[in-house]
Image (cartoon, rainbow, N blue to C red; front, side):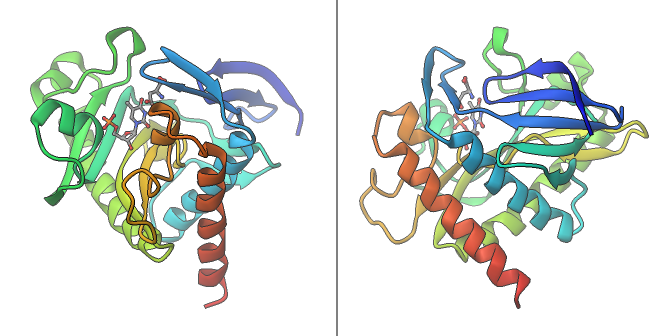
Amino acid sequence: MTTAEKLYEGKAKIIYATDNEQIYLTYYKDDATAFNAKKKGTIVDKGIVNCAIASALLQLLESKGIPTHFIEKKSQREMLVKAVKIIPLEVVVRNIAAGSLCRETGLSEGEKLPSPLVEFYLKNDDLNDPLLTPDRISLLNVATEEQIKELQTLARKINEYLREFFQNCDIILVDFKLEFGLDKEGTILLADEISPDTCRLWDILEQDKQKRVMDKDRFRKDLGEVESAYQKVQQRVLAQTEKLKNS
Ligand code: TMP
Ligand code: ASP
């Protein structure tokens, strides 16, 4: 398969067309941004690590019956995916209070939520990805009521599978962001990536509040040892994936 034109370049990935219009090729970069790209940097080999982690997690979810865009890991940094039109929503699931939830509600970081919280943000950098209400979602026509219900159901299921998987890696899944797309038939597929860039992951084996952080918060908050944290996540995710394959 030959790659053709670049369709889209995001902050962390590039999407290319392929000679099959139903298939895109995503290339994972080392670029890291935070605070809507106000902070920019590089996390060495992040593209390789995130491509490996995202491939493993998307395959895991497929095996549980979640429809995803994943087709095949093509190389260290490349993944073949089904062509979808991204729904311009960031679906955030939270199990434990952290990040913007603490800043905006006064909840303390680390507080366990009574049940998982599913939130929708508008995927729009110019507007700083604002939190949406159900009425604003219908006002903006970004998704139908039925699609929103399906996204909530999928997000909750994905959370249950990922939470259990990460627990078995000795990692707490604090929160994460998902993106979904529509294929040609209008079917909703889980798209984009799931990686330390898009999740908050805390090491169960570390008590120290800074040392336990294994995700992009290390970059956002200048905590150092970003690469080694990402690699640790990769090692544990791939080891657990192997374990599941052999069980
Ligand atoms: P938040 O607490 O900053 O709202 O982030 C919630 C989760 O979403 C966290 O796991 C990080 C992830 N996230 C992204 O993947 N992309 C983003 O642009 C933002 C703001 C958060
Ligand atoms: N990915 C987002 C950005 O650059 C924000 C973040 O992950 O904190 O800008």
